[in-house]
Image (cartoon, helix red, strand yellow):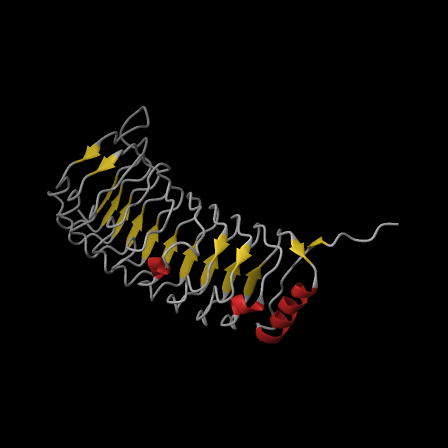
Length: 274
């Protein structure tokens, strides 16, 4: 057997198949398994070592379960894993050490959970990671206060999704070592401030989404390295159209892809009456 799929409604008339806790070496009889889909069940907990015998596993789906916590090195032994999906567990706050050892992982989806802070050591060792989904969590701390080392080891990262959180501020150099990144989605947050050099060093960045925040101004110095932008979303922010907005306009005209189209609607000052 190379692939196993356990899904809601597939084995039980009540639509709840796996209401259980995985014990260590739960899959010891499936050494050749490469794909394991446990999505949309009622799994509440997974102990360290549950997947230890699955040394050939490349894809693991645990989305839409009821996992509330994951132990350190939960996925030890599955060193060939390429894709890990933890989306939609709602109350799950992924802790430091959970994904240690997954050196070949290229896709990690932790969206729709209870992640509050991307700790410095959370992604250590994920040197092959290309796509990181962190949207619709509860990330609320100012990114400037999060140790910049949170994303430092992700040198091959190409897409980072942080939309739908409660982020207030983007500090300088937070993403500076993600030198291959092409897409950052920060839409649908509460961002009011983006510091100078926030996106410094991101010379390959093509997509930057800042729409639906509470930005009133944005300094071109925050975007100094972003010369390859082809999609830049700023709409649905309460922009102050004073002289500072002119600096941004001039930078966009001078430095960005000529096909770039950016829509900004002024909130202040109010238009004259009468």
